Amino acid sequence: ALPTRHGQRVALQVTVAATTLAGLDDHPATLGSYGPIPAQVARELAQDATWRRLLTDPTTGQARSVGTQTYRPGADLTRTVIARDVTCTFPGCRQPSTRCEIDHRIPYNHTRRPSDQPHDPQTCEANLHSLCKHHHQAKTKGWWRVTHDRHTGISTWTDRHGLTYARHPIPIHTTPVALIHRPPLPPSDWGDPPF
Image (cartoon, helix red, strand yellow):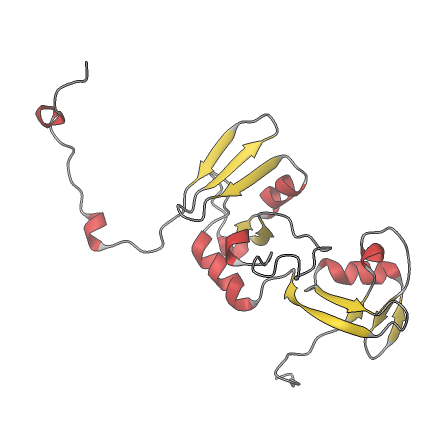
């Protein structure tokens, strides 16, 4: 087992400017306990990493604030989303959620400060869903937009032409009564037809 310090697992800390991550410049990044690394290496590491905001003093370069919000959800939140969604949330896709990627329904805004909306975190159960790689890319490229109704659990997908499809939540537990087959009512019990 790997040792922990301060109750945290072993991690690499790469400090890099947001402009460098976005590809706007090639300033070197800093690998904690090592030193400078090339911008391209930092971008490659960031592709599969947990991001955390770190504000520095512009004159001294010292850390002033470390964000509590992260781009990547924690293990408990990931398990919750996977269990809730059962499959990819794109209508008709049956890729199991355990083989899907966790995506932000409303794209994560890396420039937003937690103080802007302290009670509205971006990486939360309500804003995350499971998408297979194919449908995640289709959403990222703008081929599809998704909205979600928290009360009904229905995800509504709209394509570039305005066609809309709904993906209803999949129950993971049903009561025994729901499994009892009941024949439909006979036509005589339907009542009078409307005029």
